Length: 309
Image (cartoon, rainbow, N blue to C red; front, side, top):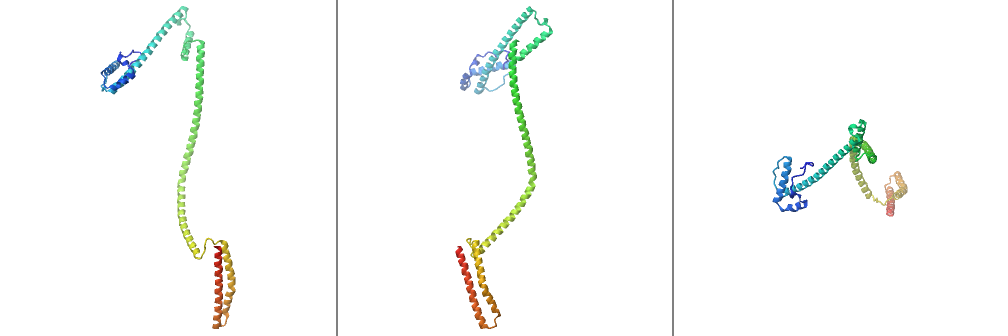
């Protein structure tokens, strides 16, 4: 609200209370003194700006907030006034010192108007360099210290610059790698998208084959059940190994060898004369022999199965 070089706000001694005191009294509701202080501060600030105070409602919260702002504004105004007065004093000292130096230079005949132009130019350059290096005088030691400090700053800046360049190079490498990776992923994605139609066709073919295989599986399972029932009917059990079956096949061959002569003999009776009595006796005899051979074969098979179990 107040300018740094334009002086302080109009005096308001009651606003010099601390923030803690203001916070202690902020919870006591409306206070006529506080409202008057805030109004006086607002009037001083808006009058200085050439504007009217806007209408608003005075509440405990707004009064406390405005009082805190007024205290802070006054403190900053006082600090700015102190700094401005210090700058004015230094400027006056610099002006008086410049006047004394001008008088000394006039006494020794070193007035700027009497000096050659190159000397004046060199002096101006020297002063500009001194201002640039932020030194108070133009002695050689000051310039050397300033140049050393500038060299150190330059070294630090170069180190930071090298570090930043290194980081930039790394980031550039990472960016290039990322772009290359992105390009590869895009190419892979495009290839996969191109492979989708043939893969879908292959999947459909596999589904068809799977349905056929499931049908075949059901068929084979049914055949397996039929074969298993057939084996159960003929007396096959899981304990019947290949060796047992081979042994039974050999017994069968032996029995066939034993029954073959009997069968041949029976066939020979076909050539007998048609005597019914003899033929009947021969047939009955052969039947008994054949029945005995079958019973022997059955006993052998039963004994072989009992042995395997």
